Image 1 (cartoon, rainbow, N blue to C red):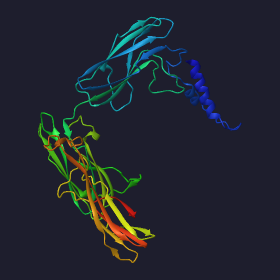
Image 2 (tube, rainbow, N blue to C red):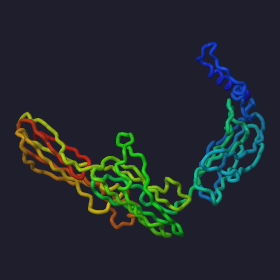
Image 3 (tube, helix red, strand yellow):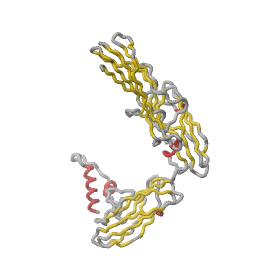
Image 4 (cartoon, rainbow, N blue to C red):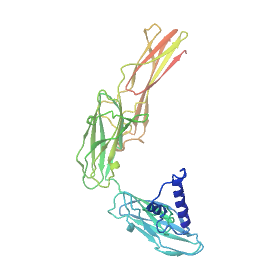
Length: 419
């Protein structure tokens, strides 16, 4: 290992001088030279033990109080017998620190003959009072570490098994409304519900509060939130009784001039230490718009007399927060159009409605909100689309089609000239 450390040190020093003209080399203090050349103890060995470790990584998901065993096979690639005494190594950093006592290794030491293999059992036992989180540790089967040209706070063992443990616990409060997403019209009021179920054997307190995230437009980039915080009101009980389901109510009053995007969340303030911050939130995403007052206009030309067929179809209206957001009050209005046709003489032409189609999107419960799983009806309508077809007699000249949409955020149109 010494030769590797020397090479790395030389490369580091040479890189500091590359590109400099003669006579312009910097002066390096003796202390700096010593620091560059320093290699931590244990990394100066000219050789390292050759072990084959299978597997190299292990991932566990355990609850507090549970334990589980993993088997790791070590093969001796040396031309002599070696003594192996595995040790547990915990990194001195990280949000959650595992204790060495959580891990037991069997056997604790063994001599492995040349070319032979030895199985080790690594048992991980999580204490009953362990916090939920992600824990990491190494099991080193030799004291060989990777060489470094500078001191490191934590050695990187060559012959090591990497262990990752996700300590989890079932949430005592089930959030039955995972998010609220909706398209809101300026000047209207909306109501939503967040249903919470307490599965514990005692009451759990809650204290919902509104929080906001940066708002991003459809083409990227941050935008000003389309709603002020006082436009959203939260009404909630202070606790959820054991085994009960309670409702947090969200009321939104949309200003008459509102437009754009609002991204925020409701921090439910669940009084349970096992709930991580992001787990106690319900995200809110609103797209705010306003009914247009001026129609869309499209000009076209007829080179000869011919019948004109016009078809206008709305975008699918997915209602309020498909599939979880739910709005109170009146039923979602269906899309409609005010369609007019202006002839070459500048006068409005009579349009004959030849066909009206209402289309819907229905599923049999796969996307139903959790609290409606037991509903008697298995059908859930998720979207409505309206298609209108018009006909008129066309004469030579310039024409204009005008469409004023209602209760839809987009529409398609087609103009067919001739039969």
